[in-house]
Length: 165
Image (cartoon, rainbow, N blue to C red; front, side, top):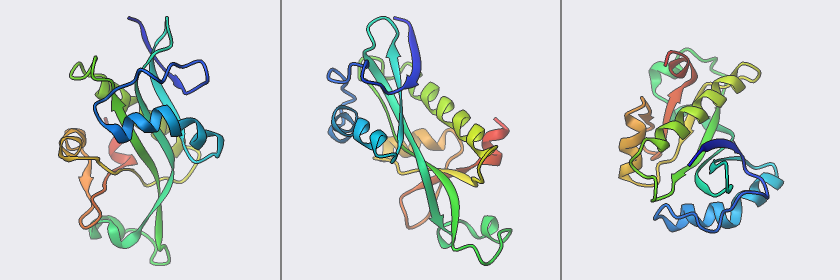
């Protein structure tokens, strides 16, 4: 199997995707294309280059987070007039159960973070935000330096931290 990451297109086979999470399965099978068409998010898929079967995916979209949700040490360097800080939302990240545990989630995450850094060079972005779906996802993101935003359930990693990977 030869895997590549590319933007979701009509050529990709979505129906067989199963990450063992109904919400994430339904998203790629029913919602991702609509979100792309409405300019709400962009979905990148990990596919077998031979048969275009999706075996993983992630989404990126513009986002902002209320200044009060960030740690004080980060916010105190920001102008007081900013109510919200610009971020990128890594909205979903999932890997098919057939390749789970083989490092493909990390590959997708690193690809997403690289794209976020690239975007930050053209657009003001302070951090990448994730909203982990469960405790396993929290543990996964913590391994890469994501920090919990208390009271929100969300996690973030500053762009400056990603640049130092």
